[in-house]
Image 1: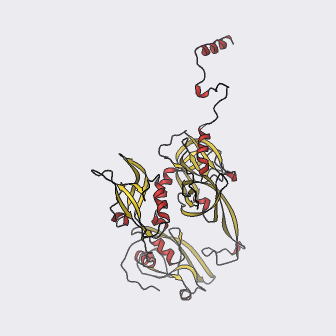
Image 2: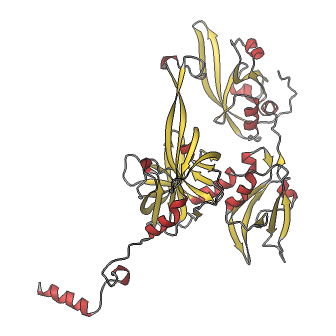
Image 3: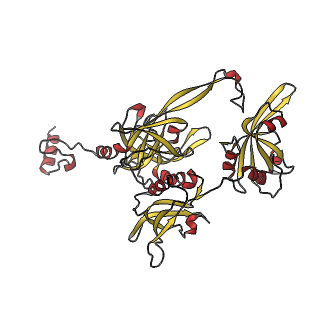
Length: 470
């Protein structure tokens, strides 16, 4: 005991007191504003609660369910299922990011801010493969928004803060650390989210779509999933994945039938110039015609300096076809580089002929199941679905086992019910692609009607064949 007293006395005499950051003020009180408090104060006004209703259709008599044509047999009823999640503002003009699964299939989407303001939101774009969605609200005021950070330099163990709407408890803040990076998780059969951030910050149902922030109040991830059987294991989509996907989700070509040919990346600095970098330019596009090239910097958009990658796309969303956007650009690696002004306008993009492409790539004819076609193939009535009316012997469809009378349910997991939807999916296919078709075949035999639903994979092989189409 005497030795212990001597040790404490020696420490006191040596002046080895607690560091200043851990000592209280003159009144003995300690500072209470931690980094978590500062981040919450700075960011919470940009975080929203998202609620909606999804219409779920159910069969009144499940025994009537038939594969392939779920709406043909037996009465159905619909009910409204509430959905709940979180989101955050990424642009002052009212653009909000959340998870795709939070808003997918919702009839009405409402966002509520921390001050109680409510808005109806409209979906702008969604990427279900990355579980990301962008919404927009109409507002007369500039909104607070979350700064986009980087996730490429995350440190294991660094502090992170989550703000969201768990179980409906609005604007809830939790904190933890980055537990790991690069995690892959299986969300459902055949559906994986990859390269996620793992955190021990408590994340619960309703946090989905909310921000994961660093101590500088910068976004580093979008909260998306938890392990229900575990404690303090949550996952977030890295902000770098979000930024990369925003470039694709908000491209005018992705949202409308237009052609611009310009993909934009993050803000970059080159010498004395700072602007949005041009990531890619499509050949023979309006951007290409104006001499814009990858690596160029966009210094101004309609006379205003951009603050982030989303600024460019927000400026294009509601712009009319042929209405020009004025860009000030520079090629920083060119000798004696000087800014130049160009006017760029979107051009209309016609819908391709999907039937012609199906004939060219797969050597088969397709038609909507009209009344005339239904009679030809012994169907009782017309129905919004596509039917194979002819197949070339020796062609790709014939070799894959497709027969006249087969019904096309999906192409590459996308439902195709008419020629317009067919055209939009065929537009995405290039020569050499392996395409997956979901087929329904109905046969009348000795034991009545029999159905078979199966998948066919075949390579798109262009052939110049003159075909007769119904």
